[in-house]
Image 1 (cartoon, rainbow, N blue to C red):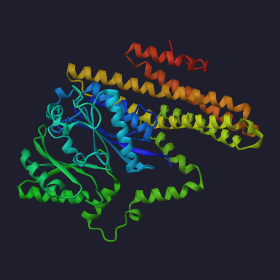
Image 2 (image 1 turned 180 degrees about the horizontal axis):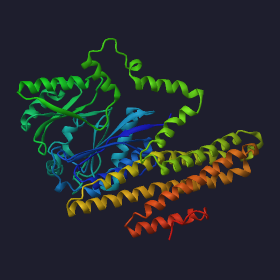
Image 3 (image 1 turned 90 degrees about the vertical axis):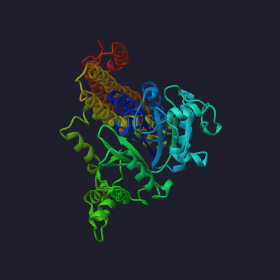
Image 4 (image 1 turned 120 degrees about the vertical axis):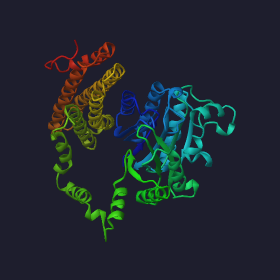
Length: 507
């Protein structure tokens, strides 16, 4: 079973879209990592980005995100309603599939050590990865925020980091890394600007003050909206459901003579949490979510249908491509073609390796099979990555351009997004070329009866290479950075030479 880990880094930047786009691009630059969600909050001056991928890939993605944050965010100039000690403030790992919380603890400690070694940013471990009981809770580590911790860490041994020297990075501060279960970030807004009321309500509901189990909460001043907010982290929604939190806040607010004007989920929320909420408020009798919610029944039916034919497996992707939306488009389809070419080659190599007639080539065939498996995984992840990179381009073009400052920020964001959107298909082209090289080596040492499978793989690989280069070409024309253009053309030239009939990319 493949490992799947979610990572939800919180960055101390929620106002500059170009910087957040750059953080997303850094996190998603690792093959195998997919973007699930991104949220920005100007009042908190904080962004929350959710990615998912295999253990090794997600670890490297987190490190790249921390490095980019250190490059872009200066905490000495940062102001916002949310407490923070770092540019990359919190980096939690959450087990999703094929991994345990213990695996995520080990991952958190490995990443924490590497953050210090690579970027000289000290690291504190929290939640399940904590090395001390007082550091399980994030608020204990973050006490005093960047400014207070910067002064105290050098003088108080009790506040020394788990990795690194007893000093903060001058501009990036410190990073808190940990492992935890799925967390719901949930905010409830009150109809008054008095943050003291929000703080009193937060104190009443949070577990550390005698409130609800699995609830952390604080009061936040939303100056831009003229409201006070109860900002909540719900660490186990099955034991303390979200509707119970809402009802308690509603009751506490009424005691203070105020009301709720709205609530929001930051990031992702499990469907199960919303099902329980619907059940509670509608007072449904004998409600069975698995049988009575349409999407749950459809998912179950699709699982049942899969053994009956391959169409059910391909249908969702084909439907997504056919939709009148910009993504998934040609870049994703090129990656899919490359992944299919690698999969066919893998099949041919493994089948041949098991035959007596090819026993003398078994070691070589297994080696090629392993290479193709890795290439398939890389190309498979690029299907989502290409679509995500184009979404970032669209977001950059939607940035405001009312002032000179906004225009400059927009131009910078567009350039960064276009570079990422160029890099993605270029990686697909390079991977597809390696697939073609491996398929060529398989021909003489595999069963002649599978020649048609190999030839089909070659045709798919050529289509992937050609399609990816077309996507590089169209993105390259949009770039302003001549140095970057030159580097891309240098990488493209040998790939293009394999397709003499294709329109040239390099000039």
